[in-house]
Image (cartoon, rainbow, N blue to C red; front, side, top):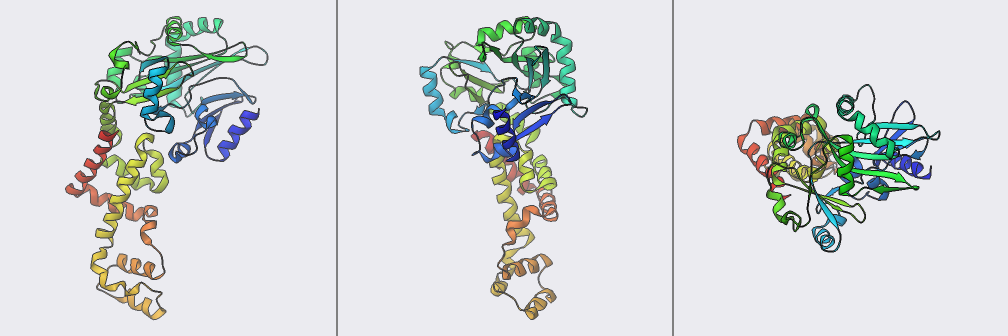
Length: 399
Protein backbone atom coordinates (compact mmCIF):
# COMPACT_ATOMS: atom_id res chain seq x y z
CA UNK A 1 0.00 0.00 0.00
CA UNK A 2 2.89 2.36 0.73
CA UNK A 3 4.23 1.99 -2.82
CA UNK A 4 0.78 2.70 -4.27
CA UNK A 5 0.54 5.85 -2.15
CA UNK A 6 3.92 6.98 -3.50
CA UNK A 7 2.67 6.30 -7.04
CA UNK A 8 -0.49 8.33 -6.41
CA UNK A 9 1.63 11.15 -5.07
CA UNK A 10 3.67 11.03 -8.29
CA UNK A 11 0.40 11.28 -10.24
CA UNK A 12 -0.47 14.40 -8.24
CA UNK A 13 2.98 15.81 -9.03
CA UNK A 14 2.51 15.12 -12.76
CA UNK A 15 5.24 12.46 -12.96
CA UNK A 16 2.97 9.45 -13.47
CA UNK A 17 -0.37 8.86 -15.16
CA UNK A 18 -2.92 6.39 -13.80
CA UNK A 19 -5.63 4.47 -15.66
CA UNK A 20 -8.43 2.57 -13.88
CA UNK A 21 -10.95 -0.06 -14.92
CA UNK A 22 -14.35 -1.10 -13.58
CA UNK A 23 -13.03 -3.90 -11.36
CA UNK A 24 -10.53 -1.90 -9.36
CA UNK A 25 -7.27 -2.21 -11.27
CA UNK A 26 -4.94 0.77 -11.37
CA UNK A 27 -2.30 1.01 -14.08
CA UNK A 28 0.59 3.48 -13.76
CA UNK A 29 3.01 4.81 -16.35
CA UNK A 30 5.42 7.73 -16.45
CA UNK A 31 3.98 10.89 -17.98
CA UNK A 32 5.29 12.79 -20.98
CA UNK A 33 5.96 15.67 -18.62
CA UNK A 34 8.19 13.35 -16.60
CA UNK A 35 10.09 12.31 -19.71
CA UNK A 36 10.55 15.82 -21.04
CA UNK A 37 11.86 17.18 -17.76
CA UNK A 38 14.78 14.71 -17.86
CA UNK A 39 15.36 15.44 -14.15
CA UNK A 40 12.45 13.55 -12.58
CA UNK A 41 13.57 10.00 -13.28
CA UNK A 42 13.83 7.99 -10.10
CA UNK A 43 13.26 4.41 -9.01
CA UNK A 44 9.49 4.92 -8.93
CA UNK A 45 9.07 6.57 -12.32
CA UNK A 46 11.48 4.17 -14.03
CA UNK A 47 9.76 1.07 -12.62
CA UNK A 48 6.18 2.23 -13.22
CA UNK A 49 5.99 1.67 -16.97
CA UNK A 50 2.87 -0.49 -16.99
CA UNK A 51 2.82 -1.24 -13.24
CA UNK A 52 -0.53 -2.80 -12.25
CA UNK A 53 -2.20 -2.69 -8.82
CA UNK A 54 -5.33 -4.33 -7.40
CA UNK A 55 -6.74 -3.19 -4.07
CA UNK A 56 -3.54 -1.29 -3.42
CA UNK A 57 -1.32 -4.31 -4.01
CA UNK A 58 1.19 -4.48 -6.91
CA UNK A 59 0.32 -7.54 -9.00
CA UNK A 60 2.81 -7.45 -11.87
CA UNK A 61 6.40 -6.56 -12.76
CA UNK A 62 6.86 -4.98 -16.19
CA UNK A 63 10.10 -3.81 -17.79
CA UNK A 64 11.71 -0.75 -16.33
CA UNK A 65 11.89 2.25 -18.64
CA UNK A 66 14.46 1.45 -21.36
CA UNK A 67 16.52 4.44 -22.47
CA UNK A 68 18.48 5.02 -25.65
CA UNK A 69 22.26 5.00 -25.61
CA UNK A 70 23.60 8.32 -24.23
CA UNK A 71 20.07 9.44 -23.32
CA UNK A 72 20.62 9.44 -19.56
CA UNK A 73 23.64 9.11 -17.29
CA UNK A 74 23.40 5.34 -16.81
CA UNK A 75 23.30 4.74 -20.58
CA UNK A 76 26.35 6.79 -21.46
CA UNK A 77 28.37 5.03 -24.12
CA UNK A 78 31.53 4.49 -22.06
CA UNK A 79 29.58 3.05 -19.15
CA UNK A 80 27.74 0.60 -21.40
CA UNK A 81 30.95 -0.54 -23.11
CA UNK A 82 32.58 -1.07 -19.72
CA UNK A 83 29.63 -3.18 -18.58
CA UNK A 84 29.83 -5.22 -21.78
CA UNK A 85 33.46 -6.01 -20.99
CA UNK A 86 32.78 -7.29 -17.48
CA UNK A 87 29.18 -8.59 -17.30
CA UNK A 88 27.10 -11.27 -19.02
CA UNK A 89 24.66 -9.78 -21.49
CA UNK A 90 22.51 -10.64 -24.47
CA UNK A 91 21.86 -8.63 -27.62
CA UNK A 92 18.26 -8.61 -28.82
CA UNK A 93 16.60 -7.31 -31.95
CA UNK A 94 14.54 -4.16 -31.32
CA UNK A 95 11.17 -5.12 -32.71
CA UNK A 96 9.15 -2.23 -34.13
CA UNK A 97 5.62 -2.09 -32.74
CA UNK A 98 4.00 -1.20 -29.43
CA UNK A 99 4.32 -2.77 -26.00
CA UNK A 100 1.58 -5.25 -25.03
CA UNK A 101 1.58 -6.71 -21.52
CA UNK A 102 -0.16 -9.76 -20.11
CA UNK A 103 -0.34 -9.56 -16.31
CA UNK A 104 -1.57 -12.69 -14.51
CA UNK A 105 -1.91 -13.11 -10.76
CA UNK A 106 -3.74 -14.98 -8.03
CA UNK A 107 -6.05 -12.71 -6.05
CA UNK A 108 -6.75 -12.80 -2.31
CA UNK A 109 -9.05 -15.80 -2.84
CA UNK A 110 -6.39 -17.58 -4.95
CA UNK A 111 -8.52 -17.12 -8.06
CA UNK A 112 -6.64 -16.70 -11.32
CA UNK A 113 -6.87 -13.16 -12.71
CA UNK A 114 -5.66 -12.04 -16.13
CA UNK A 115 -5.27 -8.47 -17.38
CA UNK A 116 -4.12 -7.52 -20.88
CA UNK A 117 -2.99 -3.94 -21.26
CA UNK A 118 -0.50 -1.56 -22.85
CA UNK A 119 2.10 0.31 -20.83
CA UNK A 120 -0.40 3.06 -20.03
CA UNK A 121 -3.95 1.97 -20.79
CA UNK A 122 -6.49 -0.58 -19.60
CA UNK A 123 -9.46 -1.80 -21.58
CA UNK A 124 -12.32 0.65 -21.96
CA UNK A 125 -15.00 1.28 -24.66
CA UNK A 126 -12.85 3.97 -26.36
CA UNK A 127 -9.62 1.97 -26.47
CA UNK A 128 -9.80 0.59 -30.01
CA UNK A 129 -6.08 -0.24 -30.15
CA UNK A 130 -6.15 -2.43 -27.04
CA UNK A 131 -9.45 -4.01 -28.09
CA UNK A 132 -7.93 -5.05 -31.42
CA UNK A 133 -4.79 -6.26 -29.63
CA UNK A 134 -6.77 -8.50 -27.31
CA UNK A 135 -8.90 -9.88 -30.13
CA UNK A 136 -5.86 -10.84 -32.21
CA UNK A 137 -3.79 -12.09 -29.28
CA UNK A 138 -6.60 -14.23 -27.87
CA UNK A 139 -7.33 -15.75 -31.25
CA UNK A 140 -3.70 -16.78 -31.70
CA UNK A 141 -2.40 -17.70 -28.26
CA UNK A 142 -5.24 -18.45 -25.81
CA UNK A 143 -4.57 -22.19 -25.63
CA UNK A 144 -0.85 -21.73 -25.07
CA UNK A 145 -1.49 -19.05 -22.43
CA UNK A 146 -3.75 -21.41 -20.46
CA UNK A 147 -0.97 -24.00 -20.44
CA UNK A 148 1.59 -21.43 -19.32
CA UNK A 149 -0.61 -20.22 -16.44
CA UNK A 150 -0.88 -23.73 -15.06
CA UNK A 151 2.84 -23.57 -14.31
CA UNK A 152 3.17 -19.84 -13.59
CA UNK A 153 -0.08 -18.30 -12.31
CA UNK A 154 1.74 -15.15 -11.17
CA UNK A 155 3.62 -13.78 -14.15
CA UNK A 156 4.11 -10.73 -16.35
CA UNK A 157 4.74 -11.28 -20.05
CA UNK A 158 5.95 -8.44 -22.26
CA UNK A 159 5.32 -8.52 -26.02
CA UNK A 160 5.98 -6.24 -28.97
CA UNK A 161 2.76 -6.10 -30.97
CA UNK A 162 3.72 -6.11 -34.66
CA UNK A 163 0.18 -5.87 -35.99
CA UNK A 164 -1.67 -4.71 -39.07
CA UNK A 165 -3.99 -2.46 -37.03
CA UNK A 166 -1.00 -0.42 -35.78
CA UNK A 167 1.69 -0.43 -38.45
CA UNK A 168 4.94 1.22 -37.45
CA UNK A 169 7.68 2.45 -39.77
CA UNK A 170 9.50 -0.92 -39.98
CA UNK A 171 6.31 -3.01 -40.10
CA UNK A 172 6.98 -4.77 -43.43
CA UNK A 173 10.46 -5.85 -42.34
CA UNK A 174 9.28 -7.11 -38.96
CA UNK A 175 6.31 -8.89 -40.52
CA UNK A 176 8.76 -10.78 -42.70
CA UNK A 177 10.91 -11.56 -39.66
CA UNK A 178 8.17 -12.60 -37.20
CA UNK A 179 5.04 -13.22 -39.24
CA UNK A 180 1.81 -11.33 -39.79
CA UNK A 181 -0.01 -10.01 -36.71
CA UNK A 182 2.69 -11.30 -34.40
CA UNK A 183 3.00 -10.71 -30.68
CA UNK A 184 6.74 -11.05 -30.21
CA UNK A 185 7.74 -12.21 -26.72
CA UNK A 186 10.34 -9.84 -25.26
CA UNK A 187 10.62 -10.95 -21.65
CA UNK A 188 8.98 -12.84 -18.80
CA UNK A 189 8.90 -12.14 -15.07
CA UNK A 190 7.50 -14.81 -12.73
CA UNK A 191 6.64 -14.54 -9.03
CA UNK A 192 7.87 -17.50 -7.01
CA UNK A 193 8.94 -17.96 -3.39
CA UNK A 194 7.71 -14.44 -2.55
CA UNK A 195 9.88 -12.62 -5.08
CA UNK A 196 10.04 -11.80 -8.75
CA UNK A 197 12.47 -13.56 -11.09
CA UNK A 198 13.22 -12.63 -14.70
CA UNK A 199 13.65 -15.54 -17.08
CA UNK A 200 16.90 -15.45 -19.07
CA UNK A 201 16.96 -15.80 -22.88
CA UNK A 202 16.58 -19.60 -22.91
CA UNK A 203 13.60 -19.28 -20.59
CA UNK A 204 12.01 -16.69 -22.89
CA UNK A 205 12.49 -19.05 -25.83
CA UNK A 206 10.87 -21.92 -23.91
CA UNK A 207 7.87 -19.81 -22.92
CA UNK A 208 7.40 -18.75 -26.55
CA UNK A 209 7.17 -22.43 -27.50
CA UNK A 210 4.47 -23.00 -24.88
CA UNK A 211 2.53 -19.94 -26.01
CA UNK A 212 3.00 -20.66 -29.70
CA UNK A 213 4.26 -17.14 -30.38
CA UNK A 214 7.56 -15.88 -31.80
CA UNK A 215 10.22 -14.60 -29.45
CA UNK A 216 12.46 -11.65 -30.17
CA UNK A 217 15.63 -12.55 -32.05
CA UNK A 218 18.66 -13.04 -29.82
CA UNK A 219 22.25 -12.72 -31.05
CA UNK A 220 25.10 -14.73 -29.62
CA UNK A 221 27.67 -12.69 -27.73
CA UNK A 222 30.36 -14.54 -29.67
CA UNK A 223 29.18 -12.91 -32.89
CA UNK A 224 30.75 -9.71 -34.21
CA UNK A 225 27.37 -8.02 -33.75
CA UNK A 226 27.79 -7.91 -30.00
CA UNK A 227 31.42 -6.74 -29.82
CA UNK A 228 30.74 -3.07 -30.47
CA UNK A 229 27.73 -1.10 -31.53
CA UNK A 230 29.41 1.50 -33.76
CA UNK A 231 28.35 -0.34 -36.91
CA UNK A 232 24.80 -0.99 -35.73
CA UNK A 233 23.66 2.51 -36.64
CA UNK A 234 24.14 1.74 -40.33
CA UNK A 235 22.29 -1.59 -40.33
CA UNK A 236 19.32 -1.84 -42.67
CA UNK A 237 15.79 -3.20 -42.35
CA UNK A 238 15.72 -2.97 -38.56
CA UNK A 239 14.79 -0.47 -35.87
CA UNK A 240 17.87 -1.40 -33.90
CA UNK A 241 19.02 -3.49 -30.94
CA UNK A 242 18.64 -3.86 -27.19
CA UNK A 243 21.54 -4.79 -24.92
CA UNK A 244 20.20 -6.80 -21.97
CA UNK A 245 22.51 -7.14 -18.95
CA UNK A 246 21.56 -10.42 -17.31
CA UNK A 247 22.80 -9.74 -13.77
CA UNK A 248 20.25 -7.02 -13.03
CA UNK A 249 17.97 -6.98 -16.09
CA UNK A 250 19.13 -3.51 -17.17
CA UNK A 251 18.49 -2.75 -20.85
CA UNK A 252 19.60 -0.04 -23.24
CA UNK A 253 18.36 0.70 -26.79
CA UNK A 254 20.43 1.50 -29.87
CA UNK A 255 18.44 2.59 -32.93
CA UNK A 256 19.58 2.70 -36.54
CA UNK A 257 19.83 5.74 -38.78
CA UNK A 258 17.43 4.06 -41.20
CA UNK A 259 14.80 3.80 -38.47
CA UNK A 260 15.11 7.49 -37.65
CA UNK A 261 15.00 8.41 -41.32
CA UNK A 262 11.80 6.39 -41.79
CA UNK A 263 10.38 7.88 -38.63
CA UNK A 264 11.22 11.31 -39.95
CA UNK A 265 9.44 10.67 -43.24
CA UNK A 266 6.36 9.43 -41.42
CA UNK A 267 6.12 11.65 -38.35
CA UNK A 268 8.66 14.44 -38.65
CA UNK A 269 8.07 16.12 -41.97
CA UNK A 270 8.16 19.92 -41.91
CA UNK A 271 4.46 20.10 -42.76
CA UNK A 272 3.45 17.64 -40.03
CA UNK A 273 5.58 19.31 -37.37
CA UNK A 274 4.36 22.79 -38.27
CA UNK A 275 0.76 21.57 -38.34
CA UNK A 276 1.17 20.35 -34.76
CA UNK A 277 2.90 23.61 -33.85
CA UNK A 278 0.10 25.67 -35.39
CA UNK A 279 -2.62 23.70 -33.62
CA UNK A 280 -1.03 23.33 -30.19
CA UNK A 281 1.66 25.86 -29.43
CA UNK A 282 3.81 26.04 -26.31
CA UNK A 283 4.28 22.87 -24.21
CA UNK A 284 1.31 21.07 -25.79
CA UNK A 285 3.25 20.98 -29.06
CA UNK A 286 6.23 19.45 -27.27
CA UNK A 287 4.03 16.70 -25.83
CA UNK A 288 3.01 15.65 -29.36
CA UNK A 289 6.58 15.09 -30.55
CA UNK A 290 8.54 11.84 -30.32
CA UNK A 291 10.18 11.78 -26.92
CA UNK A 292 13.71 11.12 -28.13
CA UNK A 293 13.96 14.18 -30.39
CA UNK A 294 11.48 16.64 -28.91
CA UNK A 295 14.07 18.96 -27.34
CA UNK A 296 16.07 19.28 -30.58
CA UNK A 297 12.97 19.91 -32.68
CA UNK A 298 11.67 22.54 -30.26
CA UNK A 299 15.02 24.35 -30.42
CA UNK A 300 14.95 24.45 -34.25
CA UNK A 301 11.32 25.59 -34.49
CA UNK A 302 11.76 28.16 -31.73
CA UNK A 303 14.77 29.77 -33.39
CA UNK A 304 13.09 29.83 -36.81
CA UNK A 305 9.85 31.20 -35.35
CA UNK A 306 11.59 33.98 -33.41
CA UNK A 307 13.74 34.96 -36.40
CA UNK A 308 10.71 35.07 -38.70
CA UNK A 309 8.77 37.09 -36.14
CA UNK A 310 11.48 39.74 -35.95
CA UNK A 311 12.31 39.93 -39.67
CA UNK A 312 8.91 39.38 -41.28
CA UNK A 313 6.10 39.85 -38.77
CA UNK A 314 7.47 42.91 -36.97
CA UNK A 315 10.11 43.93 -39.53
CA UNK A 316 12.08 45.34 -36.62
CA UNK A 317 14.81 46.62 -38.93
CA UNK A 318 12.32 49.12 -40.39
CA UNK A 319 11.51 50.74 -37.06
CA UNK A 320 14.99 51.11 -35.62
CA UNK A 321 14.50 54.89 -35.70
CA UNK A 322 11.51 54.61 -33.38
CA UNK A 323 13.32 53.13 -30.41
CA UNK A 324 12.95 56.38 -28.51
CA UNK A 325 9.75 54.65 -27.43
CA UNK A 326 11.95 52.46 -25.24
CA UNK A 327 10.59 54.36 -22.23
CA UNK A 328 7.21 54.71 -20.56
CA UNK A 329 4.89 56.64 -22.84
CA UNK A 330 2.54 59.36 -21.79
CA UNK A 331 -1.10 59.26 -22.90
CA UNK A 332 -0.29 61.83 -25.56
CA UNK A 333 2.63 59.75 -26.87
CA UNK A 334 0.47 56.62 -26.97
CA UNK A 335 -2.14 58.47 -29.01
CA UNK A 336 0.56 59.75 -31.36
CA UNK A 337 1.98 56.23 -31.78
CA UNK A 338 -1.36 54.70 -32.82
CA UNK A 339 -2.25 57.49 -35.24
CA UNK A 340 0.93 57.03 -37.27
CA UNK A 341 0.34 55.73 -40.81
CA UNK A 342 3.93 54.83 -41.66
CA UNK A 343 4.13 51.74 -39.41
CA UNK A 344 2.01 48.59 -39.13
CA UNK A 345 -0.30 47.63 -36.27
CA UNK A 346 2.15 44.87 -35.34
CA UNK A 347 4.96 47.42 -35.10
CA UNK A 348 2.78 49.73 -33.00
CA UNK A 349 1.97 46.90 -30.59
CA UNK A 350 5.64 45.97 -30.43
CA UNK A 351 6.74 49.53 -29.64
CA UNK A 352 4.03 49.90 -27.02
CA UNK A 353 5.12 46.67 -25.32
CA UNK A 354 8.76 47.83 -25.33
CA UNK A 355 7.70 51.09 -23.73
CA UNK A 356 6.03 49.10 -20.95
CA UNK A 357 9.25 47.16 -20.35
CA UNK A 358 7.80 43.97 -21.82
CA UNK A 359 9.38 41.60 -24.31
CA UNK A 360 6.60 40.56 -26.70
CA UNK A 361 8.71 37.83 -28.30
CA UNK A 362 8.30 35.78 -25.11
CA UNK A 363 4.55 35.57 -25.74
CA UNK A 364 4.47 34.60 -29.43
CA UNK A 365 4.16 30.84 -28.78
CA UNK A 366 0.82 31.54 -27.12
CA UNK A 367 -0.62 33.41 -30.09
CA UNK A 368 -2.55 31.20 -32.50
CA UNK A 369 -2.79 34.09 -34.97
CA UNK A 370 0.98 34.50 -35.15
CA UNK A 371 1.56 30.72 -35.28
CA UNK A 372 -0.83 30.49 -38.22
CA UNK A 373 0.99 33.31 -40.00
CA UNK A 374 4.34 31.57 -39.49
CA UNK A 375 2.91 28.30 -40.81
CA UNK A 376 1.53 30.00 -43.94
CA UNK A 377 4.84 31.78 -44.52
CA UNK A 378 6.94 28.61 -44.33
CA UNK A 379 4.58 26.53 -46.46
CA UNK A 380 4.68 29.19 -49.19
CA UNK A 381 8.40 29.94 -49.08
CA UNK A 382 10.46 27.15 -50.65
CA UNK A 383 13.78 28.45 -49.36
CA UNK A 384 12.59 28.69 -45.76
CA UNK A 385 10.84 25.31 -46.01
CA UNK A 386 13.95 23.53 -47.25
CA UNK A 387 16.09 25.23 -44.60
CA UNK A 388 13.89 23.75 -41.87
CA UNK A 389 13.80 20.39 -43.63
CA UNK A 390 17.60 20.28 -43.72
CA UNK A 391 17.89 21.18 -40.04
CA UNK A 392 15.36 18.53 -39.04
CA UNK A 393 17.14 15.88 -41.09
CA UNK A 394 20.38 16.76 -39.30
CA UNK A 395 18.70 15.62 -36.07
CA UNK A 396 18.34 12.16 -37.58
CA UNK A 397 21.96 12.09 -38.72
CA UNK A 398 23.23 13.17 -35.32
CA UNK A 399 21.40 10.53 -33.26
